Length: 204
Image 1 (spheres, one colour):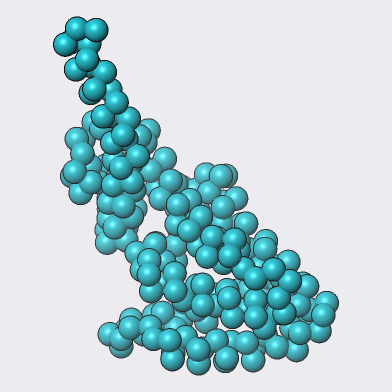
Image 2: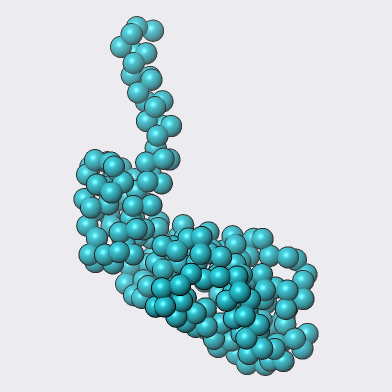
């Protein structure tokens, strides 16, 4: 193999190694900009600049802005699902499962504030693809099944599962907003107090 071929092989291998890192950098930059500027206010060149890649490079990974925002959304939802579903204690009582989900939500907000904020932004439906809806609905479906099981065992009050789920979500979002408006951080004490209050709302 001549020197030119060796150089070409090295460049190709280097690009393969860098590809995942570049894609991650683009997703990270896009998430930050979508939160700061909204989806409509974020142009692809801005994402490329923030990610430190060329304006043309970004299109090697994402066909357009819709494909990019869907990738960001699915990554955020997958992270949240892992925290809530994949690591949940199997066969635990409803109270323990609720604690796991509640702290999972709150720790997600503390550890991934941009992702948490992005998921709570409105009008995702304008650009979400079916695959993205499926990632979101997975969490809702599992939550609904857990509520139905807890109702069957007499641990949770009888009401439509989606209504109870939205009450929990509303309490979670409201606490985040209240803490943010006061310029405070979400502490373990606040999470624990809110957990007890929200559980009392659900308890049979």
